[in-house]
Image (tube, rainbow, N blue to C red):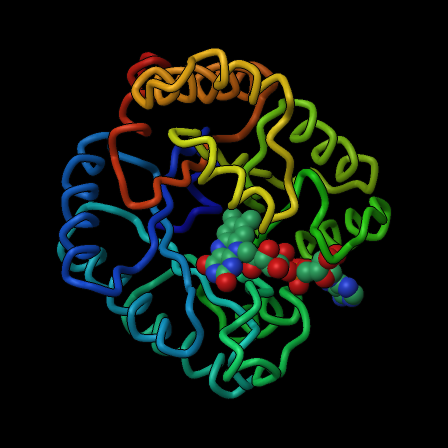
Length: 283
Ligand code: FAD
């Protein structure tokens, strides 16, 4: 099933996973998938990380999901470490295996030894390549608090997102913690005549230190009011986790009330937080 078609039918609820590198990570992922599959997500997505070695891992996980689960998978693919020809080969392999959904990305900086190997500069070129190959429903990334490389130039950042979304079918956002970050992005795109679905990315905070580190890398802020609520939970990790789930639930409720076309959960290959938020939302 293509995600563009799912979005036309109504809201989507989706989960993101990363491909395991070790047997222990594989076991964690299998457990999470087993526990999350009964929630019947509209689709799941599989990241593409860690340079060229990711090529096979992402492919194998996505194709494995197609063959052995009821899930609709979406493969992530990034520009950074491949030539145009290699990217075309990867896309053709996906299509041959029956993969119909793609998230086309610029990509995080690759390992040092692979830096400078990429031929395409930006995600929009990858969307064009995938369109030329055909058969994909294509998503792109959007950053509510602006991509760090935009250096605060909101107009240029939003112009680039609107232009690549014009070529794609939908966008998924980087995680964020305030409703206004999401509505600001959607309003900026609407002001440019862009009304395609923008799925908000949800990262439940279960450990403040870890999320602060991830936020720093992705150029977003953990707002002071969120930090204050987590700090009020004290030193008890379970109390902090509970408050993090409550905060994520509130954000999801606000997003749905504001008309978001779905919710995309960053699971980090764990199921508990996502299942708790689902239950809190009455789903
Ligand atoms: P781009 O669209 O290429 O944008 C990058 C920067 O270039 C922005 O500042 C933009 O304003 C600017 N820009 C864009 N187009 C142009 C243009 N034509 N001319 C000049 N400037 C331009 N990373 C991974 O490595 N693997 C993953 O699996 C992965 N999954 C992700 C999933 C989601 C939902 C999100 C939000 C991010 C994900 N990322 C992943 C991170 C992403 O690859 C990084 O944020 C990356 O730095 C930018 O990706 P992008 O697709 O937004 O790039």
